[in-house]
Length: 185
Image (tube, rainbow, N blue to C red):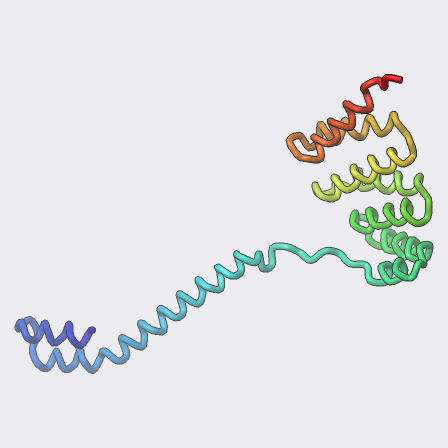
């Protein structure tokens, strides 16, 4: 295309024959630079697009506790709980471990008092929204299983008020209304 443009200018008399020949010779490096420039720009744009699409580097992987997970699978619940406690001694800000330990205590070791304490500790540790919701759900489930109506009512009302407009808040409001409605019998 460039050669055609140079020849057109030469044919019109705008440039001399020598200048036209020089420009035609310079086409090769100009085209090469253009190709390299386009390649670099499109490569960077494509890489940025893929990184944005997959959120590369923005989402940390979930915490894992391989030793505890293996023990839980083997049914070694007390040992897994001890390892979680040791881990929390070293990393007291790890709410994920605290939530996993609370679930382990409640589901497998029948330590509802310990589970409740851990759920409340999560709340006190400045949790992220997901951790806070999991702790609240854990307390609601715990109080429901225990039959602790007063604490269940408080926790349901707290959840409803804390997360308005969410399906969980709507469900908490429904259950709260059901619990407050006197049964006919």
